[in-house]
Amino acid sequence: MFSFGLHPPIQYFFIVFLIFLLGQLFVTSVGATLFLWSQSSRNNILPETDFLLPNHLYGSSRFSGSTRAKDAGGSGAPTEPVCSMVLQILVPFMLAGLGTISAGMLLEVVQNWDVFQEITEIFILVPAVLGMKGNLEMTLASRFSTAVNAGKMEPAREKWLLIGGNLALKQLQATVLGLLASLMASLLGWMAEGKVPLHHVMLLCSTSISTAFMASLLQGIIMVGVIIGSKRMGINPDNVATPMAASFGDLISLALLACFSQWFYSLIDLYPYVLYLVDLLFLCLVPLWVVISSKHPASHVLLRTGWEPIITAMAISSIGGLILDKTVSNPNLAGIIVYAPVINGIGGNLVSIQSSRISTHLHLNYSPGEVPEDRKGCYSPGHTFFGSGANHRSARVLLLLVIPGQLIFLHVIHLMKGGQTLPSPLLTVTFLSACLIQVFSLLCAADCMVHCLWRRGKDPDSYSIPYLTALGDLLGTVLLALAFVVLWSIGDSGSV
Image (tube, rainbow, N blue to C red; front, side):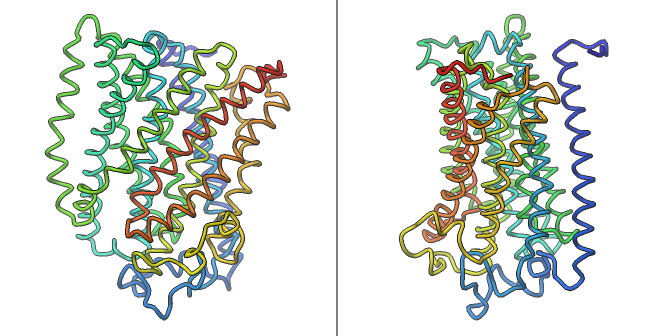
């Protein structure tokens, strides 16, 4: 092991973060090369966003009735090339995979820190804090993607008002969710253990609010750059924005969570008032975010109506966190820790792409409350995967990415020594089965949920992704825990 003269936990963090950045650069370079090659080799085929981005096609957020789509995935626009769609999805998918792998490796390291050993309720916070990227960043990315594709971000003044209002709203939501997540973790910890000391509650509150606020600020700024850059490069932001938000979201959030918790833990005995001051500082900023977010009509509406999905999603993720806490505390199942961010992150990333695409299609082609003909009857899983529309094709592509993608990520975990030894064939089979069941269920849920929300007059961009990513966290944690329980019961250690 190299030595940089740093404290071992900090040294581990910098090593993992450096590996992640190098992987990001490599995958981005390869992906950009493949994308440009594919575009240059198709002289007579329009790229996917040629019919989405030009503003003269979308003076409003929808087509007129004469040009509405006749199916759930297509429109009157040129057919979406599968090659372009796959390449645009593949690059951020790999980036997101590297991010979740790095987060899993980091979590495996920090679980041995004093604060994680002493205050185990922090494990309940992990899915809730990581899930905020689905509640906030991915929702923001989905809203911005729809705004870009509908031509609503072209006037400079309107664009910056929209960005400023949404970022301020996101900081407000991050502060509130951080506080509620810490209280939820304290409540679940008390229900499980029978007691939670007050100083533990204060540490959880300070850590959760600080992590949520700083992670939201950093990721929000990056997401604005990704959305604007995608528009200028002619790439459909629906395909890249939400997984890009996740590619750095898990690692940033987990790193901040670990660092803040360890720092507050070092102050809890000597300077306990610092924890109270930190909470007070962030809460005093709430009125400022309310004023700024109310300046734009879209964020002003969400200021009043956008709380239900993100709070519910946070509660669902916290239940998954309780399961993770109990699983990690069992020495026979401790190996789950490195795989949990991977299965949860990848499942949420894939379903967020599909949700964002369906939502954009509905915004551009249908009035609120109006849905395609094949979505007016009883729902069937066959509706999600079988059909000729672009969203049917994307559902098939996303499902087909699960097995090869997770195989690559499992191998990368081994190469980067995230696991102690090479996964056994049985562990590989059970892990891939859990991932496939999770993503299949999420894609079906996304298809049903987005259309149901639209039929009820609710904006899927603000409602669907929080529910779906939280459901992905809960479902992924349950399936992964079940897989490890099965392996342990039959005597398979999970390694060879």
